[in-house]
Amino acid sequence: MYLFLSRPLVTMPLGAKLLKVTPKAVDLMLAQHGGALPRELTGRTRYRAWGIV
Image (cartoon, rainbow, N blue to C red; front, top):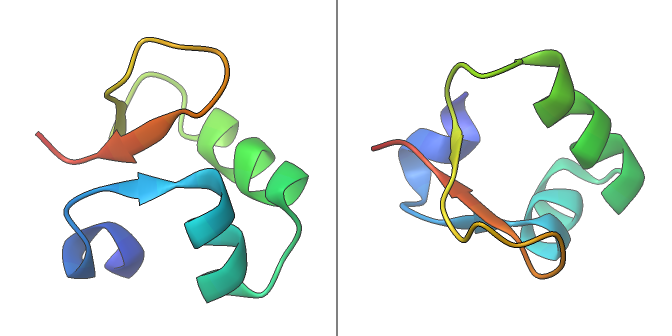
């Protein structure tokens, strides 16, 4: 959660770099949150970005 408080917009590569995990791991972490925070902002399946709105 700190990642989303320190950055207004988080992309998959940025999250993977900052958390030192693979992009797939970031995707799985976000999927575990369900529809809760953070929210997907782009509405795309590729080049997605998340943030707290």
